[in-house]
Amino acid sequence: MIVAREQPPSGITRASLWKDLRLEWRSKDAINSMLFFSLLVVVVFSFSFDPNAEESRAIAGGLIWVAFLFAAVVALNQTWAREIRNQVLDAYRVSPAPANSLFLAKAIGNFIFVSVLETLMTPLFVLFYQLRPLGPAWQLLLVAALGTWALVVNGTFFAAMSLRTRSREIMLPLLLFPISIPALLAMVQATTNILTGEGARVWIALLLSYDLVFTSACLLLFEVVLNAE
Amino acid sequence: MNRYLIAAYAATWIIHIAYLATLVSRYARLRREIEDLKKSR
Amino acid sequence: MKKAFPILGVVTALLLTYALYQALVVAPTEQTMGDVQRIFYYHVPSAWTAFILFTINLIASLVYLATRKPDADIVALVTAEVGVVFCTIVLVTGPVWARPVWGIWWTWDMRLTSTLVLWLIYVSYLVLRRFSSGGETPMLAAALSIFGALCVPFVYFSIWFFRTQHPQPVIGGGGSIDPRMLHVLLINWLAFSCFAFLICWSRYRLEKIQREVEQAHAMQSLITPRRDR
Image 1: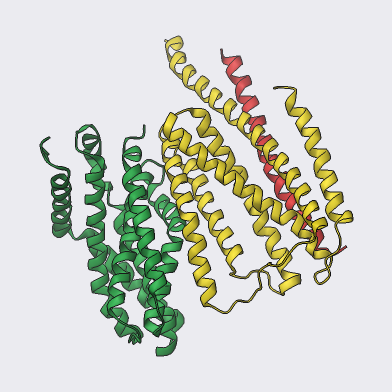
Image 2 (image 1 turned 90 degrees about the horizontal axis):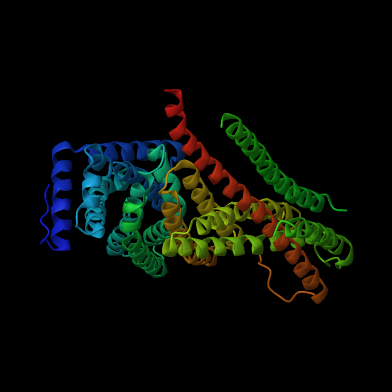
Protein backbone atom coordinates (compact mmCIF):
# COMPACT_ATOMS: atom_id res chain seq x y z
CA MET A 1 0.00 0.00 0.00
CA ILE A 2 1.29 3.43 -0.89
CA VAL A 3 0.70 6.17 1.60
CA ALA A 4 1.05 9.69 0.30
CA ARG A 5 3.29 12.07 2.15
CA GLU A 6 0.48 14.54 2.72
CA GLN A 7 -1.53 11.97 4.65
CA PRO A 8 -2.07 13.07 8.27
CA PRO A 9 -0.87 10.53 10.86
CA SER A 10 -4.45 9.56 11.68
CA GLY A 11 -5.05 8.79 8.01
CA ILE A 12 -2.08 6.43 7.98
CA THR A 13 -3.36 4.73 11.11
CA ARG A 14 -6.79 4.32 9.55
CA ALA A 15 -5.42 2.99 6.25
CA SER A 16 -3.16 0.47 7.97
CA LEU A 17 -5.88 -0.61 10.39
CA TRP A 18 -8.39 -1.02 7.56
CA LYS A 19 -5.91 -3.14 5.62
CA ASP A 20 -5.34 -5.43 8.63
CA LEU A 21 -9.04 -5.77 9.33
CA ARG A 22 -9.77 -6.69 5.70
CA LEU A 23 -6.96 -9.22 5.63
CA GLU A 24 -8.27 -10.76 8.83
CA TRP A 25 -11.84 -10.72 7.54
CA ARG A 26 -10.77 -12.69 4.46
CA SER A 27 -8.49 -15.22 6.17
CA LYS A 28 -9.91 -15.29 9.73
CA ASP A 29 -6.60 -16.86 10.77
CA ALA A 30 -6.12 -15.03 14.06
CA ILE A 31 -9.69 -15.13 15.27
CA ASN A 32 -10.17 -18.82 14.47
CA SER A 33 -7.01 -19.94 16.20
CA MET A 34 -7.77 -17.72 19.21
CA LEU A 35 -11.32 -19.01 19.47
CA PHE A 36 -10.32 -22.64 19.30
CA PHE A 37 -7.47 -22.08 21.73
CA SER A 38 -9.61 -20.38 24.38
CA LEU A 39 -12.34 -22.98 23.91
CA LEU A 40 -9.75 -25.63 24.72
CA VAL A 41 -8.67 -23.71 27.80
CA VAL A 42 -12.26 -23.43 29.04
CA VAL A 43 -12.90 -27.13 28.58
CA VAL A 44 -9.62 -28.22 30.14
CA PHE A 45 -10.14 -25.94 33.13
CA SER A 46 -13.69 -27.15 33.73
CA PHE A 47 -12.42 -30.74 33.75
CA SER A 48 -9.59 -30.01 36.12
CA PHE A 49 -11.64 -27.98 38.65
CA ASP A 50 -15.28 -29.11 38.36
CA PRO A 51 -16.56 -26.24 40.53
CA ASN A 52 -20.03 -25.44 41.86
CA ALA A 53 -21.66 -22.03 41.32
CA GLU A 54 -20.22 -20.47 44.48
CA GLU A 55 -16.68 -21.65 43.80
CA SER A 56 -16.79 -20.74 40.13
CA ARG A 57 -17.61 -17.13 41.08
CA ALA A 58 -14.39 -17.04 43.03
CA ILE A 59 -12.18 -18.58 40.34
CA ALA A 60 -13.93 -17.50 37.11
CA GLY A 61 -12.14 -14.13 36.98
CA GLY A 62 -8.79 -15.88 36.94
CA LEU A 63 -9.87 -18.51 34.42
CA ILE A 64 -11.38 -16.03 31.96
CA TRP A 65 -8.37 -13.77 31.93
CA VAL A 66 -5.81 -16.54 31.74
CA ALA A 67 -7.70 -17.98 28.74
CA PHE A 68 -7.85 -14.57 27.04
CA LEU A 69 -4.21 -13.82 27.82
CA PHE A 70 -2.99 -17.03 26.21
CA ALA A 71 -5.33 -16.58 23.26
CA ALA A 72 -4.20 -12.96 22.81
CA VAL A 73 -0.59 -14.12 22.48
CA VAL A 74 -1.65 -16.11 19.42
CA ALA A 75 -2.97 -12.96 17.72
CA LEU A 76 -0.11 -10.78 18.93
CA ASN A 77 2.50 -13.15 17.57
CA GLN A 78 1.24 -12.79 14.04
CA THR A 79 0.81 -9.00 14.26
CA TRP A 80 4.09 -8.28 12.56
CA ALA A 81 4.74 -11.64 10.89
CA ARG A 82 2.77 -10.57 7.83
CA GLU A 83 4.80 -7.38 7.49
CA ILE A 84 8.15 -9.14 7.48
CA ARG A 85 7.32 -11.58 4.72
CA ASN A 86 7.58 -9.08 1.89
CA GLN A 87 9.83 -6.58 3.66
CA VAL A 88 6.83 -4.35 4.31
CA LEU A 89 8.33 -3.35 7.63
CA ASP A 90 11.55 -2.21 5.97
CA ALA A 91 9.53 -0.21 3.48
CA TYR A 92 7.69 1.36 6.38
CA ARG A 93 10.94 2.16 8.12
CA VAL A 94 12.26 4.22 5.21
CA SER A 95 8.92 5.90 4.51
CA PRO A 96 8.27 9.31 6.08
CA ALA A 97 5.14 8.02 7.84
CA PRO A 98 5.43 8.36 11.63
CA ALA A 99 6.15 5.08 13.41
CA ASN A 100 3.47 5.69 16.02
CA SER A 101 0.68 5.70 13.42
CA LEU A 102 1.67 2.18 12.48
CA PHE A 103 1.92 1.17 16.12
CA LEU A 104 -1.53 2.55 16.93
CA ALA A 105 -3.03 0.81 13.89
CA LYS A 106 -1.59 -2.52 15.02
CA ALA A 107 -2.58 -2.02 18.65
CA ILE A 108 -6.15 -1.01 17.75
CA GLY A 109 -6.36 -3.94 15.33
CA ASN A 110 -5.30 -6.38 18.03
CA PHE A 111 -7.71 -4.73 20.46
CA ILE A 112 -10.56 -5.36 18.02
CA PHE A 113 -9.53 -8.99 17.45
CA VAL A 114 -9.27 -9.77 21.16
CA SER A 115 -12.53 -7.91 21.90
CA VAL A 116 -14.33 -9.98 19.28
CA LEU A 117 -12.89 -13.09 20.87
CA GLU A 118 -14.10 -11.95 24.28
CA THR A 119 -17.64 -11.20 23.11
CA LEU A 120 -17.84 -14.64 21.51
CA MET A 121 -16.30 -16.50 24.44
CA THR A 122 -17.98 -14.80 27.40
CA PRO A 123 -21.44 -16.36 26.81
CA LEU A 124 -19.77 -19.74 26.72
CA PHE A 125 -18.00 -19.04 30.00
CA VAL A 126 -21.28 -17.96 31.59
CA LEU A 127 -22.92 -21.16 30.39
CA PHE A 128 -20.15 -23.54 31.38
CA TYR A 129 -19.56 -22.05 34.80
CA GLN A 130 -23.13 -20.91 35.58
CA LEU A 131 -22.02 -17.37 36.34
CA ARG A 132 -24.33 -14.63 37.58
CA PRO A 133 -22.63 -11.46 38.79
CA LEU A 134 -23.72 -10.22 42.20
CA GLY A 135 -22.22 -6.77 41.62
CA PRO A 136 -22.88 -4.17 38.90
CA ALA A 137 -22.40 -5.99 35.59
CA TRP A 138 -21.72 -2.85 33.53
CA GLN A 139 -18.41 -2.50 35.35
CA LEU A 140 -17.33 -5.78 33.77
CA LEU A 141 -17.44 -4.05 30.37
CA LEU A 142 -15.13 -1.34 31.67
CA VAL A 143 -12.75 -3.90 33.16
CA ALA A 144 -12.77 -5.87 29.92
CA ALA A 145 -11.99 -2.80 27.80
CA LEU A 146 -9.24 -1.49 30.06
CA GLY A 147 -7.77 -4.94 30.66
CA THR A 148 -7.74 -5.87 26.99
CA TRP A 149 -6.05 -2.61 26.09
CA ALA A 150 -3.42 -3.20 28.80
CA LEU A 151 -2.57 -6.62 27.35
CA VAL A 152 -2.74 -5.53 23.73
CA VAL A 153 -0.74 -2.30 23.89
CA ASN A 154 2.20 -3.93 25.64
CA GLY A 155 1.75 -7.07 23.59
CA THR A 156 1.98 -5.21 20.28
CA PHE A 157 5.09 -3.43 21.52
CA PHE A 158 6.82 -6.58 22.74
CA ALA A 159 5.83 -8.45 19.59
CA ALA A 160 7.71 -5.81 17.61
CA MET A 161 10.61 -6.26 20.01
CA SER A 162 10.69 -10.05 19.81
CA LEU A 163 10.73 -9.84 15.99
CA ARG A 164 14.37 -8.92 16.36
CA THR A 165 15.31 -11.98 18.37
CA ARG A 166 15.92 -15.62 17.69
CA SER A 167 12.88 -17.88 18.35
CA ARG A 168 10.54 -14.91 18.35
CA GLU A 169 7.33 -16.82 19.08
CA ILE A 170 8.68 -17.97 22.45
CA MET A 171 10.11 -14.56 23.23
CA LEU A 172 6.79 -12.67 23.29
CA PRO A 173 5.21 -14.35 26.33
CA LEU A 174 8.54 -14.28 28.15
CA LEU A 175 8.68 -10.50 27.78
CA LEU A 176 4.97 -9.77 28.06
CA PHE A 177 3.91 -11.85 31.07
CA PRO A 178 6.22 -10.40 33.76
CA ILE A 179 5.37 -6.81 32.83
CA SER A 180 1.66 -7.68 32.67
CA ILE A 181 1.47 -9.19 36.14
CA PRO A 182 0.10 -6.04 37.84
CA ALA A 183 -2.47 -5.52 35.08
CA LEU A 184 -3.46 -9.16 35.18
CA LEU A 185 -3.82 -9.09 38.96
CA ALA A 186 -6.01 -5.99 38.65
CA MET A 187 -8.21 -7.54 35.92
CA VAL A 188 -8.66 -10.78 37.80
CA GLN A 189 -9.38 -9.08 41.12
CA ALA A 190 -11.79 -6.58 39.56
CA THR A 191 -13.69 -9.35 37.75
CA THR A 192 -13.83 -11.55 40.82
CA ASN A 193 -14.96 -8.67 43.02
CA ILE A 194 -17.74 -7.72 40.62
CA LEU A 195 -18.88 -11.34 40.37
CA THR A 196 -18.94 -11.79 44.14
CA GLY A 197 -20.49 -8.36 44.70
CA GLU A 198 -17.59 -6.52 46.32
CA GLY A 199 -16.35 -3.13 45.15
CA ALA A 200 -13.83 -2.97 42.30
CA ARG A 201 -13.20 0.79 42.14
CA VAL A 202 -9.58 0.61 43.25
CA TRP A 203 -8.72 -2.06 40.69
CA ILE A 204 -10.36 -0.16 37.85
CA ALA A 205 -8.42 2.96 38.81
CA LEU A 206 -5.21 0.91 38.89
CA LEU A 207 -5.94 -0.53 35.45
CA LEU A 208 -6.69 2.91 34.06
CA SER A 209 -3.39 4.34 35.31
CA TYR A 210 -1.52 1.27 34.07
CA ASP A 211 -3.06 1.82 30.62
CA LEU A 212 -2.15 5.50 30.59
CA VAL A 213 1.45 4.96 31.72
CA PHE A 214 2.22 2.09 29.38
CA THR A 215 0.44 3.56 26.35
CA SER A 216 2.61 6.66 26.73
CA ALA A 217 5.74 4.53 27.18
CA CYS A 218 4.92 2.50 24.04
CA LEU A 219 4.34 5.64 21.97
CA LEU A 220 7.57 7.20 23.25
CA LEU A 221 9.73 4.15 22.63
CA PHE A 222 8.19 2.46 19.60
CA GLU A 223 10.19 4.45 17.09
CA VAL A 224 13.40 3.46 18.87
CA VAL A 225 12.46 -0.22 18.70
CA LEU A 226 11.30 -0.08 15.08
CA ASN A 227 14.46 1.64 13.90
CA ALA A 228 16.98 -0.09 16.17
CA GLU A 229 19.91 -1.24 14.08
CA MET B 1 23.90 -22.61 65.86
CA ASN B 2 20.55 -22.86 64.21
CA ARG B 3 20.47 -25.04 61.08
CA TYR B 4 18.20 -22.65 59.18
CA LEU B 5 20.72 -19.89 59.84
CA ILE B 6 23.56 -22.03 58.50
CA ALA B 7 21.45 -23.03 55.49
CA ALA B 8 20.69 -19.40 54.61
CA TYR B 9 24.31 -18.24 54.94
CA ALA B 10 25.57 -21.25 52.99
CA ALA B 11 22.98 -20.68 50.25
CA THR B 12 24.06 -17.07 49.91
CA TRP B 13 27.68 -18.01 49.38
CA ILE B 14 26.90 -20.97 47.14
CA ILE B 15 24.93 -18.69 44.82
CA HIS B 16 27.70 -16.08 44.79
CA ILE B 17 30.40 -18.67 44.17
CA ALA B 18 28.36 -20.33 41.42
CA TYR B 19 28.00 -16.99 39.65
CA LEU B 20 31.71 -16.25 40.08
CA ALA B 21 32.49 -19.69 38.66
CA THR B 22 30.52 -18.90 35.50
CA LEU B 23 32.52 -15.68 35.20
CA VAL B 24 35.81 -17.56 35.57
CA SER B 25 34.82 -20.12 32.94
CA ARG B 26 33.81 -17.33 30.56
CA TYR B 27 37.20 -15.69 31.17
CA ALA B 28 38.95 -18.98 30.39
CA ARG B 29 37.00 -19.44 27.17
CA LEU B 30 37.82 -15.90 26.09
CA ARG B 31 41.50 -16.44 26.81
CA ARG B 32 41.45 -19.53 24.59
CA GLU B 33 39.74 -17.57 21.82
CA ILE B 34 42.35 -14.85 22.07
CA GLU B 35 45.11 -17.45 21.78
CA ASP B 36 43.45 -18.88 18.67
CA LEU B 37 43.15 -15.43 17.17
CA LYS B 38 46.83 -14.74 17.79
CA LYS B 39 47.90 -18.08 16.29
CA SER B 40 45.83 -17.69 13.13
CA ARG B 41 47.23 -14.24 12.47
CA MET C 1 43.39 1.34 37.82
CA LYS C 2 45.03 -2.07 37.51
CA LYS C 3 46.28 -1.85 41.10
CA ALA C 4 42.96 -0.69 42.48
CA PHE C 5 41.29 -3.99 41.70
CA PRO C 6 43.35 -6.29 43.97
CA ILE C 7 43.36 -3.66 46.72
CA LEU C 8 39.58 -3.42 46.57
CA GLY C 9 39.42 -7.21 46.53
CA VAL C 10 41.43 -7.49 49.76
CA VAL C 11 39.42 -4.72 51.43
CA THR C 12 36.15 -6.40 50.43
CA ALA C 13 37.28 -9.79 51.73
CA LEU C 14 38.28 -8.22 55.07
CA LEU C 15 35.00 -6.31 55.25
CA LEU C 16 32.95 -9.43 54.51
CA THR C 17 34.81 -11.40 57.20
CA TYR C 18 34.34 -8.61 59.72
CA ALA C 19 30.67 -8.31 58.78
CA LEU C 20 30.20 -12.06 59.18
CA TYR C 21 31.81 -11.91 62.64
CA GLN C 22 29.56 -8.98 63.54
CA ALA C 23 26.45 -10.78 62.30
CA LEU C 24 27.14 -14.10 64.02
CA VAL C 25 28.89 -13.04 67.25
CA VAL C 26 28.53 -9.35 68.07
CA ALA C 27 24.89 -8.75 67.12
CA PRO C 28 22.49 -9.39 70.03
CA THR C 29 20.23 -12.45 69.78
CA GLU C 30 16.64 -11.56 69.01
CA GLN C 31 14.24 -12.35 71.87
CA THR C 32 11.42 -14.18 70.08
CA MET C 33 13.08 -15.55 66.94
CA GLY C 34 16.46 -16.45 68.41
CA ASP C 35 19.48 -17.08 66.22
CA VAL C 36 17.40 -17.49 63.07
CA GLN C 37 16.88 -13.73 63.04
CA ARG C 38 20.56 -13.37 62.04
CA ILE C 39 19.52 -14.30 58.47
CA PHE C 40 18.33 -10.68 58.48
CA TYR C 41 21.95 -9.51 58.12
CA TYR C 42 22.31 -11.31 54.78
CA HIS C 43 18.74 -11.08 53.54
CA VAL C 44 18.15 -7.34 53.85
CA PRO C 45 21.55 -6.09 52.57
CA SER C 46 21.17 -8.37 49.54
CA ALA C 47 17.73 -6.87 48.84
CA TRP C 48 19.04 -3.31 49.16
CA THR C 49 22.00 -4.08 46.92
CA ALA C 50 19.72 -5.65 44.30
CA PHE C 51 17.44 -2.60 44.29
CA ILE C 52 20.41 -0.26 43.91
CA LEU C 53 21.76 -2.33 41.02
CA PHE C 54 18.36 -2.27 39.29
CA THR C 55 18.23 1.49 39.74
CA ILE C 56 21.67 1.82 38.15
CA ASN C 57 20.41 -0.41 35.33
CA LEU C 58 17.57 2.04 34.64
CA ILE C 59 19.90 5.06 34.74
CA ALA C 60 22.41 3.38 32.43
CA SER C 61 19.62 2.44 30.01
CA LEU C 62 18.39 6.04 29.91
CA VAL C 63 21.96 7.24 29.36
CA TYR C 64 22.35 4.72 26.55
CA LEU C 65 19.14 5.89 24.85
CA ALA C 66 20.31 9.49 25.09
CA THR C 67 23.98 9.08 24.13
CA ARG C 68 24.26 5.65 22.39
CA LYS C 69 27.53 5.02 24.23
CA PRO C 70 28.34 1.28 24.32
CA ASP C 71 29.79 1.64 27.83
CA ALA C 72 26.39 2.65 29.21
CA ASP C 73 24.92 -0.47 27.64
CA ILE C 74 27.58 -2.67 29.27
CA VAL C 75 26.86 -1.07 32.65
CA ALA C 76 23.14 -1.81 32.15
CA LEU C 77 23.84 -5.43 31.27
CA VAL C 78 26.24 -5.95 34.18
CA THR C 79 24.02 -4.38 36.84
CA ALA C 80 20.98 -6.36 35.68
CA GLU C 81 22.93 -9.62 35.83
CA VAL C 82 24.50 -9.03 39.24
CA GLY C 83 21.18 -7.60 40.48
CA VAL C 84 19.44 -10.83 39.54
CA VAL C 85 22.10 -12.78 41.48
CA PHE C 86 21.44 -10.70 44.61
CA CYS C 87 17.69 -10.88 44.07
CA THR C 88 17.96 -14.67 43.85
CA ILE C 89 19.69 -14.66 47.23
CA VAL C 90 16.85 -12.60 48.70
CA LEU C 91 14.33 -15.10 47.32
CA VAL C 92 16.27 -18.08 48.70
CA THR C 93 17.09 -16.72 52.15
CA GLY C 94 13.54 -15.36 52.58
CA PRO C 95 11.82 -18.77 52.68
CA VAL C 96 14.65 -20.25 54.78
CA TRP C 97 13.89 -17.52 57.32
CA ALA C 98 10.12 -17.84 56.95
CA ARG C 99 10.04 -21.57 57.61
CA PRO C 100 11.19 -21.59 61.27
CA VAL C 101 9.53 -18.26 62.13
CA TRP C 102 6.14 -18.46 60.37
CA GLY C 103 6.03 -22.23 59.88
CA ILE C 104 5.70 -21.98 56.09
CA TRP C 105 8.29 -21.84 53.32
CA TRP C 106 6.49 -19.44 51.09
CA THR C 107 3.73 -16.95 51.65
CA TRP C 108 2.23 -14.62 49.07
CA ASP C 109 2.89 -11.65 51.26
CA MET C 110 3.59 -8.22 49.95
CA ARG C 111 7.37 -8.13 50.03
CA LEU C 112 8.15 -11.68 48.94
CA THR C 113 5.67 -11.49 46.07
CA SER C 114 6.83 -8.14 44.76
CA THR C 115 10.46 -9.24 44.97
CA LEU C 116 9.54 -12.34 42.98
CA VAL C 117 7.84 -10.25 40.29
CA LEU C 118 10.83 -7.93 40.18
CA TRP C 119 13.09 -10.95 39.75
CA LEU C 120 10.89 -12.22 36.89
CA ILE C 121 11.03 -8.84 35.12
CA TYR C 122 14.83 -8.67 35.22
CA VAL C 123 15.23 -12.31 34.26
CA SER C 124 13.13 -11.57 31.18
CA TYR C 125 15.49 -8.65 30.50
CA LEU C 126 18.46 -11.03 30.60
CA VAL C 127 16.60 -13.54 28.40
CA LEU C 128 16.00 -10.82 25.81
CA ARG C 129 19.70 -10.00 25.84
CA ARG C 130 20.60 -13.65 25.50
CA PHE C 131 18.22 -14.26 22.60
CA SER C 132 18.94 -11.24 20.47
CA SER C 133 22.38 -11.04 19.01
CA GLY C 134 22.76 -8.05 16.81
CA GLY C 135 23.48 -4.37 16.83
CA GLU C 136 19.93 -3.64 17.93
CA THR C 137 20.17 -5.58 21.21
CA PRO C 138 21.22 -2.56 23.35
CA MET C 139 18.31 -0.46 22.12
CA LEU C 140 15.75 -3.19 22.73
CA ALA C 141 17.23 -3.94 26.14
CA ALA C 142 17.21 -0.27 27.11
CA ALA C 143 13.54 0.02 26.12
CA LEU C 144 12.66 -3.09 28.11
CA SER C 145 14.56 -1.79 31.13
CA ILE C 146 12.40 1.35 31.10
CA PHE C 147 9.25 -0.77 30.87
CA GLY C 148 10.45 -2.87 33.78
CA ALA C 149 11.15 0.17 35.91
CA LEU C 150 7.74 1.68 35.07
CA CYS C 151 6.19 -1.58 36.15
CA VAL C 152 7.74 -1.56 39.64
CA PRO C 153 5.28 0.93 41.26
CA PHE C 154 2.35 -0.97 39.74
CA VAL C 155 3.70 -4.22 41.12
CA TYR C 156 3.92 -2.73 44.61
CA PHE C 157 0.50 -1.07 44.52
CA SER C 158 -1.33 -4.03 43.05
CA ILE C 159 0.15 -6.48 45.52
CA TRP C 160 -0.48 -4.05 48.35
CA PHE C 161 -4.18 -3.76 47.42
CA PHE C 162 -4.32 -7.51 46.93
CA ARG C 163 -2.87 -8.15 50.36
CA THR C 164 -4.93 -5.61 52.25
CA GLN C 165 -8.09 -7.22 50.89
CA HIS C 166 -7.24 -10.72 51.98
CA PRO C 167 -6.53 -12.14 55.43
CA GLN C 168 -2.90 -11.56 56.16
CA PRO C 169 -1.03 -14.73 57.11
CA VAL C 170 1.99 -12.80 58.23
CA ILE C 171 2.60 -9.69 60.25
CA GLY C 172 5.19 -7.60 58.47
CA GLY C 173 8.18 -6.17 60.36
CA GLY C 174 7.19 -2.80 61.77
CA GLY C 175 8.32 -1.50 65.12
CA SER C 176 11.74 -0.15 65.94
CA ILE C 177 15.05 -1.91 65.55
CA ASP C 178 17.76 -2.23 68.20
CA PRO C 179 20.54 0.30 67.36
CA ARG C 180 23.20 -2.45 67.72
CA MET C 181 21.34 -4.55 65.16
CA LEU C 182 21.08 -1.56 62.84
CA HIS C 183 24.84 -1.05 63.19
CA VAL C 184 25.56 -4.67 62.19
CA LEU C 185 23.05 -4.41 59.35
CA LEU C 186 24.78 -1.35 57.94
CA ILE C 187 28.23 -2.99 58.16
CA ASN C 188 26.92 -5.99 56.26
CA TRP C 189 25.31 -3.75 53.70
CA LEU C 190 28.59 -1.89 53.17
CA ALA C 191 30.44 -5.20 52.77
CA PHE C 192 27.94 -6.57 50.28
CA SER C 193 27.87 -3.32 48.33
CA CYS C 194 31.66 -3.47 47.97
CA PHE C 195 31.38 -7.11 46.93
CA ALA C 196 28.70 -6.26 44.35
CA PHE C 197 30.84 -3.44 43.00
CA LEU C 198 33.78 -5.84 42.69
CA ILE C 199 31.73 -8.44 40.80
CA CYS C 200 30.27 -5.76 38.53
CA TRP C 201 33.74 -4.50 37.79
CA SER C 202 35.07 -7.90 36.75
CA ARG C 203 31.91 -8.63 34.76
CA TYR C 204 32.33 -5.25 33.05
CA ARG C 205 35.92 -6.07 32.07
CA LEU C 206 34.83 -9.50 30.87
CA GLU C 207 32.16 -7.96 28.64
CA LYS C 208 34.65 -5.41 27.30
CA ILE C 209 37.13 -8.14 26.33
CA GLN C 210 34.36 -10.28 24.89
CA ARG C 211 33.21 -7.47 22.59
CA GLU C 212 36.77 -6.83 21.48
CA VAL C 213 37.27 -10.51 20.68
CA GLU C 214 34.00 -10.54 18.72
CA GLN C 215 35.22 -7.56 16.72
CA ALA C 216 38.52 -9.29 16.08
CA HIS C 217 36.66 -12.38 14.88
CA ALA C 218 34.58 -10.25 12.54
CA MET C 219 37.71 -8.55 11.21
CA GLN C 220 39.41 -11.88 10.66
CA SER C 221 36.49 -13.36 8.77
CA LEU C 222 36.74 -10.34 6.49
CA ILE C 223 40.46 -10.91 5.88
CA THR C 224 40.86 -14.71 5.78
CA PRO C 225 38.91 -15.57 2.59
CA ARG C 226 41.12 -13.19 0.65
CA ARG C 227 44.26 -14.93 1.92
CA ASP C 228 42.88 -18.30 0.83
CA ARG C 229 42.44 -17.24 -2.74
